[in-house]
Length: 339
Length: 261
Image (cartoon, each protein chain N blue to C red):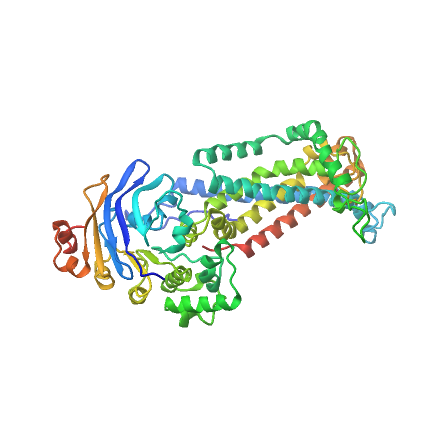
């Protein structure tokens, strides 16, 4: 989209009429040029990033066995998919677990702020939530690695050792974890995917909470009064009016949070002991890694083909985030309520 | 059901925080009749209306002092749950407010389904039909009960709200300028409906339209305010016919004859 045709109308007959303007006003032109320019800048930046990622990934493409038919220079041991797939798995799994933890808590906090808390307390709490978003991720990484991980250990032991099938229940593997995600053989220190996901959850909490709060505050007063006048309790008002109205906003907020969780690097890097498997056992250490953390940990000592491969994994993350955003928009457009 | 009793309001003072909005209302509202409240903007008639089902206090800082007896029970007595009051005293608002996420049918059943009350499908069907018939809306919507309530016209939406209100079988229905956003034909439909509803419900209606008050009501109360920042008062309360032909108070006469307000 270009808009180069901002040239003012050519001044015609110099007939003296006070209603005619002498071309466009200067401030107007300046402002519209600036805002159009800023808009274009977004496209340009995005395109440049995509071009950079693709161009720099070319060496990896050229050597891969998947694209051998095109380039004919393949190293049969070098796979585009095989190498990055475990990291995609780890990235998505960590982000989803973070989301599962963060969404209910965020909705709870947002509802408390918008509908339950006394006004002054709500303002203070909202401010604190915003502060939480301002904490740098390296601080979260430190806090998670040093403070949180040892304290989560008893919980993990409980989930792994105590929450298991008792022997008197037939047809189940007795002694195995009831929830398969918590099976396996976790060992301290618990630098596992679950710990990383918990810290990610804390990091995306403020995003989701802030957006959900805004949506809940926009619920039309008249709708709430309609429910109240029918004899609804406060909880019933939330259930029949506030949550249905806020649903699409909460979905959108969650997707924003998911986007952040997918790309978060530092905290994951500092907490997770890396591995590259497709293990569902989120308590086991040294089994998972995320794309972003993997890039950060290896880029300093990579060059040539290794660097190209890292950049290619960055491209994968870029596309992944893109797809998830597209899905989010689609969901929001389907669930938006007019009121 | 026992013979319906009047609503008795005694020494009611209504506040927004420190501000006394309506002062010292004493009135008796006859059951199974239509009572209209008129007066200039800001005189406190809507505020007063909202104290009759304890909706006033949902505004932060708002409260009322005094006695409002409905069926012999003071709704401002200690330990009274406003939720239970509102189930017996329904309310229709100025702007139609059906629940946007619900179908027509679910809108009618919304109040009944609150508090986890269970209702069988047959009872629900019957209730939907009788409530919509009671609101003179059945014939217009019976073929599209599962369509969203927001798809109806403004007048139909308001009648849907009335159906939703009477579906919980209240004793009293409060109406806060229910026709002010409607065209004359929809207004007429609602006014006809009010005439029919008074056989079963005690109706209190706030209106800006004096013709409407004289058309629909049996008794009329006139609220007025001495000036900005002063509390509103119930100036006169009498049979509608007398209020509009031969009011006792000079202020009422001035207002009704259009000399101010």
